[in-house]
Image 1 (cartoon, rainbow, N blue to C red):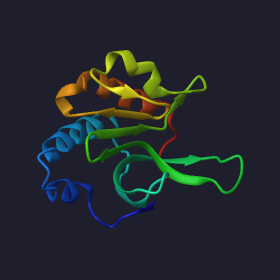
Image 2: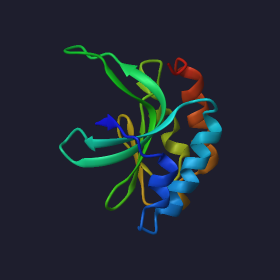
Image 3: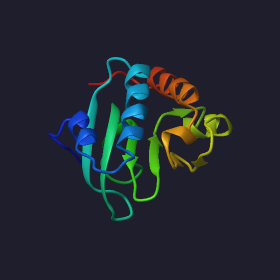
Length: 143
């Protein structure tokens, strides 16, 4: 995946899916909780081979045990065919931060660095704001 020149707000406004409202609502929470962080649209082939568009919040460099370091985001927001995904790459005490918030986020499924849910309504936005604020505080400043 690569950074896109498309503004994330234009991307959200251009969605024809009714869930664009959900993305806009979640986007507002993440921007407010992560002041001063870059917000950029990532586009291309995601791990697993699917074409994706992900709004990334904050810069992160992930060190890979084999190969070059990877530029990525602290939190990513993506609209999938049947759900919405949050990718939380912030780590605390050796574990992905999303796991620490899993039982308070609402009606969600939590993987290692992935949180999925049907709509913004299924997600406790106050808990999401707390998660994003902690991710912001744990991660080094953007370059």
